[in-house]
Image (cartoon, rainbow, N blue to C red; front, top):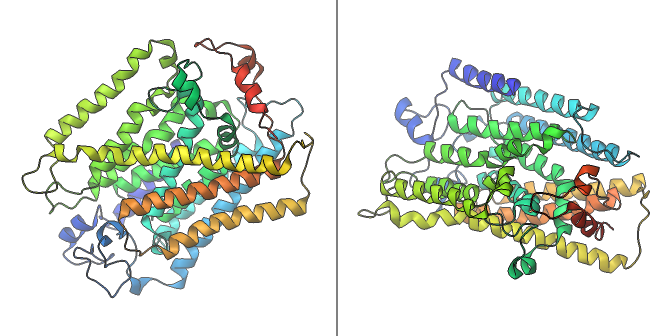
Length: 484
């Protein structure tokens, strides 16, 4: 954390020393009179000389912090993609080796308080590439934003949040901790999701989360703005969390919630920062992100705290009441209607855009994996793999190539759709579903590489009864049913 703070300080100090002051395209133009570093925001979407600056939604889809076309060179394209690929491959390789190392332990011990060789290696690689990105920004400047759609970067992060919702579903349910393992109503028992897909995501999420984070990390240059600061802090703590795999800190619920919910703070800051001051009510996007991520925080994420299991379920309404009180207060004061004469209450429906897409993607991601598991079971039949099964190096290379092809396809799709004339929010949701489907495919490929999925927990978890009176042992046995 001290390294992250020092690195962000260097990001601000280096930018300030060069006179950088580009909080948004609107304020930057008014301060500097002429656009020296960037092209102006495409206010009227009528600039047909440059792709992406025309069409009905160009203002939302145009990324401001990138070099003008006459300053772009082969070097500015190549160097950032080289660093991105190296960063991604190194992290993936270390996660892969870490999983193999832990899965081959004879004592079954998975988590502990010690830092192992792969933890130090992951920390070191991430630190090196954070420094390289800062240097690269002040050398060639451009991130990958020059080549891929801005909505793909945001979609990758929101997809990661959706997968976290799926991973945490086992303990905190869907909405207001329902349905959780102790929910005994008939509807909860009927709707409770099968744990097979959830266990697979819990085992292989590191590959997915590292891609989403590193893809976003290299999308943006390290500009000294508040939006970039909050965003880079988010990618930094997620990569830090990934570096702590198989440590007790990786399981800490307070730390995990910070990683998961920081998108609420970041989304709010960047949406407010980039709002158009000439439009009544400012940008139409900040209530969508602020209220949307706030909704998910109040209805689902906040219940990561362990104390909720020890108190009456009726207290779960408190975060919801606080959330709606804040929303109503903002809609009555700060938020303005999109049309003259409208109040902020006319936009209150916007709070449902983000949560609707996230909860829907949670269900579809689970469904994708559930279908894949059923297809695999139908092909394999009653055959069970040996617990000591180990795939040959040739087959491993074949399956790993399939994984790389899926993620390469993500980049190619984002490249070809970078200037498409589709509403920003709609395109972001499309990317979320494409990424989710592809990531579920990679999970099944990793499942083949690693062999049977063996549930490894600490003995205390299996033998003890949790505060709700339901033993974890029943869940472990249920999960083992789908291990092959």
